[in-house]
Amino acid sequence: MKFDTKVVRAGIEPDPTTGAIVPPIYQTATYVLPEVGRDLGFDYTRSANPTREILENNLATIEGGRFGTCFSSGMSAVDSVLKLLKMGDHVVCSDDVYGGVSRHFNNILVNYGLTFTYVDSSNPENVENAITSETKLFWIETPTNPLLKITDLNAISKIAKKHQILFGVDSTFATPVFLRPFEFGADIVMHSTTKYISGHNQVIGGIIITNDEEIHERMKFVQKTIGAVPSPFDCWLTLIGVKTLHLRMERHASNAQAVAEFLESHPQVEKITYPGLKSHPQYGVAKEQMDGFSGMISFELKGGIPAGTTVMNNVKLCSLAESLGAVETMITHPATMTHVDVPAEERHARGLSDGLVRISVGIEDPDDIIDDLKQALEKV
Ligand SMILES: Cc1ncc(COP(=O)(O)O)c(C=O)c1O
Image 1 (cartoon, protein in one colour):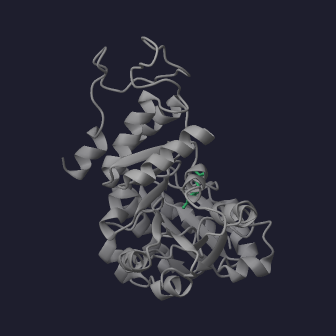
Image 2 (spheres, protein in one colour; image 1 turned 90 degrees about the vertical axis):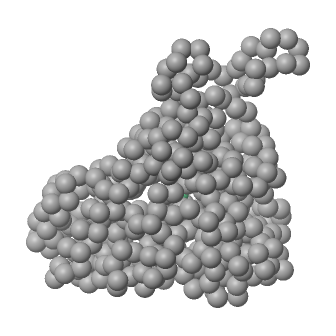
């Protein structure tokens, strides 16, 4: 099966009892056993559920992996990977990871004896230099949220293999349409399925995919033991969303390219970051390892916080919303929205300037998105 066919069909057979082309929502907590010691493959939905299993197999196949394990959010998927580690273990992590991930590492997992070093992983040397005798995991996000830094996965994989360190990739921004980290030697691929995978702002979810049987067994064990599982209905909604992933991503990327080119020449824009522009510092790596540049853009406005607030308050089509990766264009101003509680000094140290704006470009007509941004920028 070619990639686009896998997106639509992989792991999905007509329902054996009725022939339904869309897998049923098995909305059940438990299953009746035919006799003591024998089940029909399922006993309790925290451990396994047929609708969830179809989604796990579908996403694993699309990603080019053997095993998938679904979780109730991207965050619980990340947390489950970290449960592979033990007290005293050390993690090297991309410095611009999604803020919820670093919040989890720095405020919860450190209390359980794990330690973390954050480095700009777009320079692989930084990752190698951060290794200690206790390093057990590289946690790489590419492109990062929100600064869209790109990491050379081949280079990181070589370092991981040399030092026998587990290599996990948060590939939420790229999706398997544009990046398949297993092709570059990753051990684990993670997605917040809340974003492009489900694609319509309809669910919260996450998945861990691997080719390693031992890691998979462990993920299944964590899934059934902790119980951070998505509902059968959420799995079903995600399955329906996935069917158009390849088509949506193409449009997200072409719209984002058009919006990025518009912003690049706008007088109110100080700096624009989009992996599909030659001005992106890792444009070469992105072009080499990705099949497209996805739909996320960040740019810096001249005029700091007042300019950011003006744009936010004047957009009409672009929705002021903190999420990303759905059909609607969404816009955020970290300084006054997602990172409003972070002291300015800390925010600036992370590269989140006062005028930084992040856009998740949707699949509307690109002219309408550009016109909306144009009129909002004119108000600055
Ligand atoms: C790159 C990335 N990873 C993980 C997450 C967490 O996912 P969720 O919100 O589904 O828990 C997010 C959420 O924005 C994200 O952007």
